[in-house]
Each structure stands twice: as C-alpha cells, then as structure tokens.
Image (cartoon, rainbow, N blue to C red; front, top):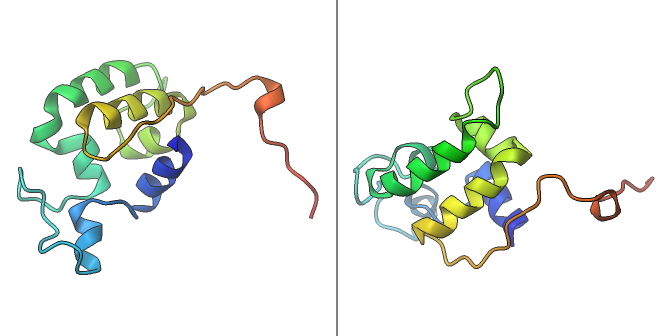
Amino acid sequence: GACSILVQLRTGHIALNFYLHRFARHNTPLCPTCEEPETVEHFILDCARYRRERSTLMNKLATTNPGGDPFNITNILSNPEAHKPLIKFLTATERFPLNLPIPDPNPPASRRPTSRPL
C-alpha cells in the first residue's frame, strides 16, 4: 500500500535502476531517459520523462513547508502533508504498478496508531 511505497522511497529500496543494478537485476544504474543515476531523488525531482507529472506535484507541494523549501526530497518524503500529492505523482507516472489509496495526512484520532508499552 501507500505506507510500503513511502518506506521504499525513503530507504531507496525501490525498483529504480540504481537500486536494481546493485543486485544485478538491471544492466545499468542509469535512467533510460536522462542517463543519470536513477535514484529516488532523480525520479521525483529531476527526470525529464516525468516533467508534466512533476509540475502537478510541485504545484500541490507549494504550501507543504511554510518558511522552507517544499521542493526538497526530505520534505517530499517525510512531511505528511506531501504524501497525498506524492502518491498522486507516483500513480500518474505509471512507473510502478500502483493502485494505491491516497493517505489522509490528518487521520481522525480513532484511526491514529497508538503506541503500546513494551
């Protein structure tokens, strides 16, 4: 689901050529469009192939980090307000076989995970 893909993006353990190449699952670590390492940051912020989808993402992210840069990879991957636009971006790129529900950045208190004592 959405949580799984967000964890994969944060850790870099996702089916992008840079990661797949480490395990001989792809013949090159490079992006086929840009010929740059196909990392999470490249995929989300730089790849020319997803320029249109990124434009929509950036418009949505403009208000997610008041006083800071909303267009940096740290904000995009860690700010709950950025998750919904990010999932929409991932779906629009069709880069991954996704059929993800869009996460609610502010779930009702009854749906929030509670910590349990160890």
